[in-house]
Length: 409
Image (cartoon, rainbow, N blue to C red; front, top):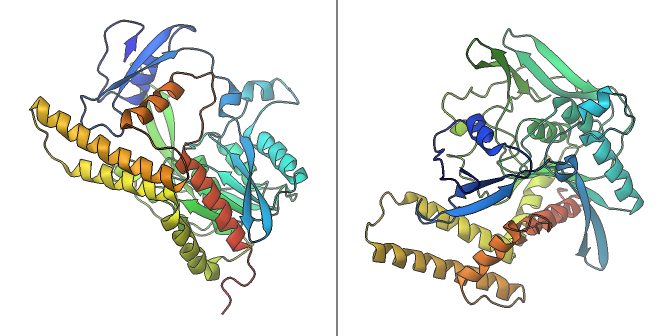
């Protein structure tokens, strides 16, 4: 990490808050980050990203919507997708009495009402990469999809259990829904996914979540601060979200290695446990449909070029991780990199051929496309093909779940 054109500071092993302090600085100044791309052969293959510091607008992390049109036979079904990167609230505007203050629940409610006027057949709530945020917003967001009822349990270090819930009987969206999660869905995102799953209000798809089920607070000391874990989150079923996370009903390929990413990968992580279940009434039982839903999804994933490409990339990453040594000969290292680039190029061109796209001449062409997007922050970043594939598959699973004959004996 470097300020403007100064020398880089090696931050490997630093605490995240110390790294953040280096990244922060006066508006308009530049900070450079030297990173190791995920596909690098070793730590010498770095890439530098320059960032001009500016005010982070709430809109950049706000909920967004789109509609996917999915054909099923002769019918074209419209699936609304709401992507929620974090749980937020403009507390300053709220405290000042601004009637139009922004918050997760308000924004999502508005988007749902817009999607309803556009006559959607189902809703996908995308919580992938959502690291959490406001607990009160997670609680109220669940209330958009259920009537009155509990949403999450919080157990203090002293053993006292507090039950949070939705007191509002109104339901903003009562239709079929799917929630997408991945390994980077954590904390408040896990509370929402867990509640939707426990209530049978919708299907959870993706990969097992982060497993962040603890509550921390900072205590000031004469020199620095002390972080204490003072409580744990529990689902209304009584199961903790800590360590194990939320396990999806239907899985997608997981690009993150669970041995490296997640609460369970951290030293001294608190264990998973349970407390008594809260009293609640499920809306639906998907258990009889799950076997057929999983089989249909797996068949599509096997045939989909984007899913195949992703699985091939995951296999390469696992093989690279098994390597315990690297050659010190430059010629050998170059040959290894060339071999890996050729393998990736072949994979990418197989995907492009299956989708009717023009092939690339070299792997460098693909890298340059990514670099061009990263260096143009004013241009909205396109979803990666595999991200689009995930959203489409989530919509197809939702459509499958609407089949009244599914799961009948």
